[in-house]
Length: 216
Image (cartoon, rainbow, N blue to C red):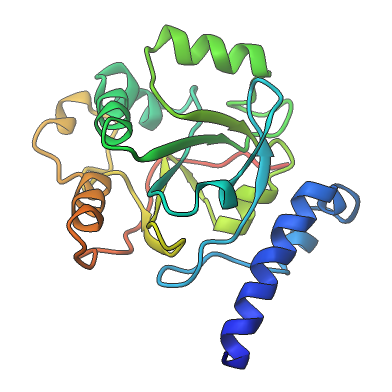
């Protein structure tokens, strides 16, 4: 095994331990970020974060499955564009119907735009008829910073081997206009189609658009 591969695996396991053991809470999210940072084409950093039901959810538990990570902020007009048109929910159902794991993450700090309690997050999921596998709460911003999530929505696709194969925008229409959903090139759908057929993702990195993630 090469030194570089050994180091990447070590860092991946280290990042999981940081989140799980709460070291990031003591040292601060920026110190945790220094340990590992997501890069397309490399193993997706492992993490553990609480779901809205209080159960810890670990990315490592989904090895062998395709995983979508969606950063969200329900107050952001860019996010509202995709939820109020039903675009995000349709993509969630399409993906999970094919066995994809969909994890929605909220990294807004308490007191900032988009912050919600677990109960409020569940109400949003029900009210919007959203269909993620789970909604994860990342109030300290550790997971968001680890993945370099800058905007909402910010989307990531991890393949069955645990490799990060897509990071960026949901589509190629960086506006808040609902009419722009129709006819947009949906990068996430395209990435999932490529992964599903065993082909390389044609556009693995795009520039995410939307509101900035409201970290602490």
